[in-house]
Length: 374
Image: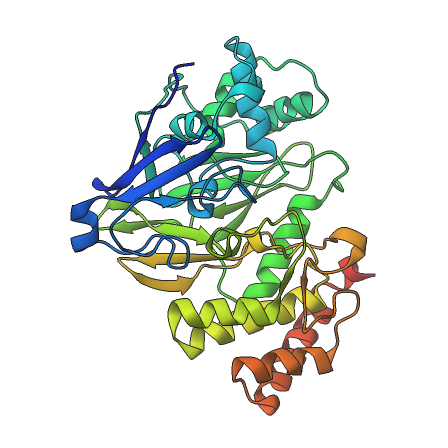
């Protein structure tokens, strides 16, 4: 694979800036003059909209700025990329971050695009989800798959451990998940019910579906929220995770909801966005969604105006030690109403309102998800 001496970063056809290697393991980035005049900061805290070269730190993203690391696949899709590299005679351990971004090209989550693109060729999409699920299972079991190229082409650059594909339907692009090793047979149905419950609690979620299967209860799918239709044309939305914005690894639990609340306020300056996050926090607590790490909270930006992205990856889960990956006023194992109120107080949400929201969420969760919470 050719060496990427530099990468040009684009948004909606506009040139954002240039990225290049620096001292072997680090990367440097500089905004273009046009983008400084007409654009916005793609990561306000680490990449302010100012002239000059900015150098990323080695940790936690192997020499990349977090907003660019967000574009790289991890978990399942990282596995697919590495399989494709080996198939092409390349050693994945010797592929640089810039080379991996050139593989992402214009297929990443969010709106950032990277040029030049390393193209392996496009494959015709397969609509038989049961077939794709079976091929995913083979790969997870370290077996060869006849559809490796198809899975790679349909995988996009989304993160997460569970196998997934992107499929295009008349109403847009959908992310469909398949069971991973150790998942219960009804994992798709479980995530579907969790999302419906979250919606009933007033939480903003993407449109969701349960795609039928001949072999399980169905595959969970959600419509991409980093894409929107405008006059019949699809438009990409810039997206950044809390992990990227704060330059912290989601693999090391070090975040508290008070910090997330502060981040939300600094980005949006809107009380309604704070309440959206508070509502989601309550749901995660009462629905036992403890894999609430910094990659599972994202923000969308439309020409400099930030807002909290719809909630995603909602299901019964645990993190390290069975605790919440993001603590609630310092409590990770068994956060209660007193901890919820502490977070609300620091976020400027009055205690009566906070308790009313939390009680409503708890009631909905207990009523709709009791079978999963036993």
